[in-house]
Image 1 (cartoon, rainbow, N blue to C red):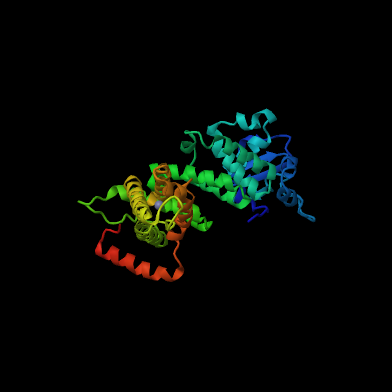
Image 2 (image 1 turned 60 degrees about the horizontal axis):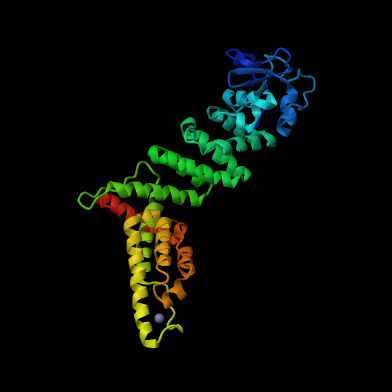
Length: 366
Ligand SMILES: [Zn+2]
């Protein structure tokens, strides 16, 4: 919500002037939280249609808002840090705003720019913030500089502005952070859920399942770690895990149908081809299963495909069928992770009850 009005004098008493952005030559006083900024109106109106209309509200007989410390323009819902950050770059010389000249340590300011630029429709500053972020985000030191709320901000703004590639890249960064600090999982789940980002949700679920996978052993099973995660997400994780295990077991038992007879074979020899194909399939799936846990299903299926394609040239029927892996790819395309974690709504009640039963019995859910 945007608002722009003056507060009563009592409310503006404890404020302080910003040490940097309080220009004697400024023509406009803006208050953000308890900080007063005296700046040049044009710097904001030139960059933002929202500021332009805020600053040109009809005032009638009243003194103009922003004309003095007693009557500043008050920006509600923003922080002094954010406002100072955007002024830092608006007032900087061109050379100091070059994407390459912004250091990693400045990223929290850049994210503040993204946040305000989105709110005040400062399109070029928004693009600038994304370009700077894109330039830096893969550097190993970046994640230390950013708080979870910084990451959430950039994700939110990317989502609203359809910088979807950057949004996906940010989810990578986020997953790395969660890997080293699992307490960040809940925030990420909330954000992904708020944006209906199923792909991100699935990756978060897989991450939690992978962590769980390492906790439990045959000798000492542990209850599924709930870690304060809302029930809806626990539901989906357990549903997904169950659905993936049963589907994978079915897949193992039913290889893609091998053609009944190809020109290279006689009818009687081809019987042997069918048997060999079935055992190649089973071996490839069993090997991939040992190498990758259930929650790393994408990598597991890739392994299956590689193993089967590498077997080409063993016998002609197999070559003709497996070829470059296209029939395997078809199976993989059908095996989409999202389908397993987001079952049809009718199932959810059943899963709720099953899950609650497991919790009440302290049964290991695997
Ligand atoms: Zn054959």
